[in-house]
Image 1: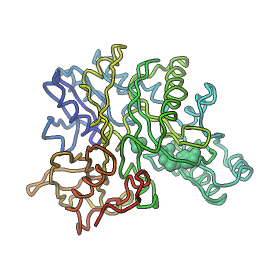
Image 2: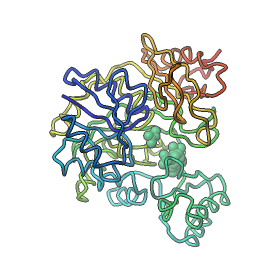
Image 3: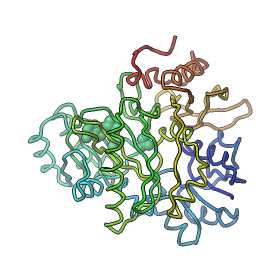
Length: 425
Ligand code: AMP
Ligand code: GLY
């Protein structure tokens, strides 16, 4: 079979890698892809937003299955466009992807179907939003309704911070149309984790839990990013919470989307907080998480192509997971998530043994790889347990010592390992 992966980040590199390992896959196209993918896939230069171009490409190359990585094309209806053209594609329709595209829609769905989440109200009127914030007090969370590239959430420690966030979004149009409406929500305390599942209608096949580190700097300081590191599974999340999250969150959400006439096919991602009264939802995504995918897929023992086909055909893919652990640390351009320079030389020594490298923002130049994005690559390792995986990753990352163009967090996974020691000498 010939498969096509749409996207250019680390998540898509992991997908491309896993598909290339499938015995059934003869060819992988990465569109537009990144330099790291060239080892296992052919790159084709069509933009993720060019729906007609992508359909034409899939027809021309006789692609048997297309997988859409990022959220923007999903919300633009790329899957619907492929289906209208009779092409097989894995991902949610535009209507189903709204669970990621509108926080208010997601909240209404959760309220209607009793899916555990933080209390909230949605506003388009600034005065009403302010009155609600004053009534509830801080800490409190202010969120832009629509997609804001991971920047649309303000966890406000004080009332004045929350008022300012609401004003920026509603009055000053901080995120354009995405912040014409906001959700103001209860602050939830507890350990955060991500749970993804392959979903087709009411059929839900959960993956293992993963933990992302969203803040830029050590100790969860600094601005939110797309994710600076991840590991899977998550030892501090008890099995009972995992079971509860599947039975009381993922399954009822899939059912609810069917009830609402928006059946979901694709990857349903729940961002969860383990509160004293069990896991609650802080967000849904309609796609694989990044960088969670980079530490979850290496632990999947099935042929992923068969998994996609089974899910699309309404068949149980019978997922099997390794008992090992994966950890991954992102190397980012200095300045990210703010301004940063591109085109800086990136030292890449491909991993050996348990260590692997996932490219996110690299291109090739005459002298080797150069950076082309904020998140440049992820160094991962698959080992018998999390401490061992972290040790292997950080040992490999020593090649970035003294490289002033890049930075990485030195405390990925530390909150989960018993001895909170630094893995960097
Ligand atoms: P999101 O973009 O929705 O994933 O939110 C970004 C980050 O804000 C999350 O990873 C959480 O750390 C935090 N966050 C979002 N909602 C809440 C909440 N209700 N309570 C506490 N923290 C939250
Ligand atoms: N890792 C968070 C996300 O993919 O949205």
